[in-house]
Image (cartoon, rainbow, N blue to C red; front, side, top):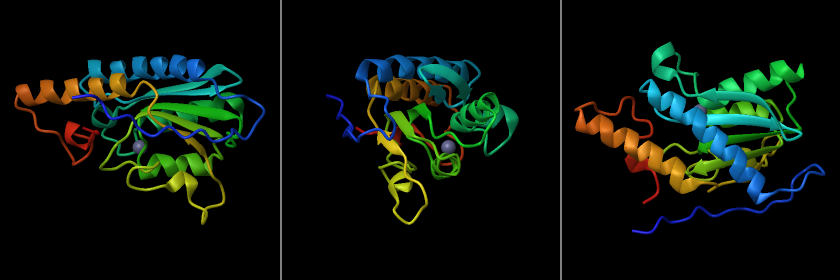
Length: 187
Ligand SMILES: [Zn+2]
């Protein structure tokens, strides 16, 4: 069955930087490399890359199991590293690339950091907070809004997650903790 494409919003970017589809795909491919690092150590394969002025200022991959830390999502590492590198918590010139639509916690961190823009790969129909289940980044009640583009390299991002869960199931390992088994991905 053909993959249903996520609706790609074409919001104007806050700053002068023009949104380039090719550039988005380039950085998403690097976020997928991060996700594969998680895969290699049997973590749910989600990766993130933070970019400022076309340079990578932060990277991260999910390591919730290995650290036993509920906040150890890919996005959190990338945001923290970007803030440390830029020497400020305010990330209003940063674009974050994430392979899976972020959760409520990570979307909250993006609001806190005044992030300029989020680009994600595949939506998460179950826990997605950036357009699927919640619209945290576009909520007028909050003091900041983040531009969102979804569906960049969606098939690759979803395929990696599906493969991960299929492999685990074939070995008799059930998905843990309710989050992100392949059933939450778009059909
Ligand atoms: Zn998260």
